[in-house]
Length: 131
Image 1 (cartoon, helix red, strand yellow):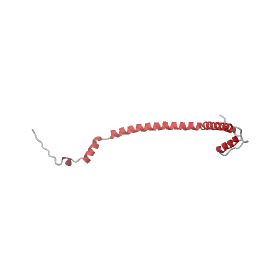
Image 2 (cartoon, helix red, strand yellow):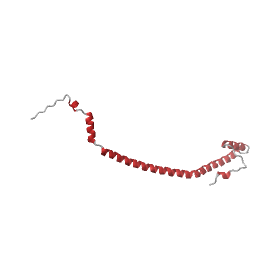
Image 3 (spheres, one colour):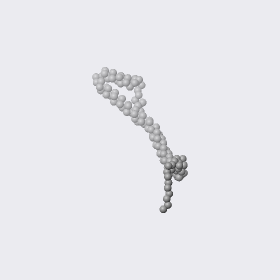
Image 4 (cartoon, rainbow, N blue to C red):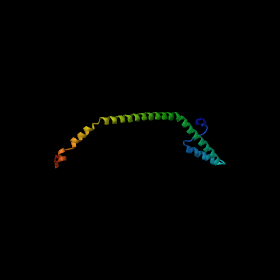
């Protein structure tokens, strides 16, 4: 890959902004017999430089992106394992809690706290007959 710095030449000016450089190129082109041809050439060089810059950035950033991808993949694998462990532990805890429940004791406790035989049978008469 050819680096853009290869094309830098200190014999020529560098403008502070790309807009200023393009304005300068337009001024020079307007002094030519065929300004459109000059500006076409300038734009071709500019587009090529931008494309090369993107390629240089991609090449420079590739190791970092690969490192990030590897770390994200490892983190996802760890997370998946943790979620599977949590699911398994949760199933075990639910099963253990259900097995530890004394349903008879719970019903008896509710019955003792909420059911009053006197209130339930108040005003009730019972008759027993033997045949």
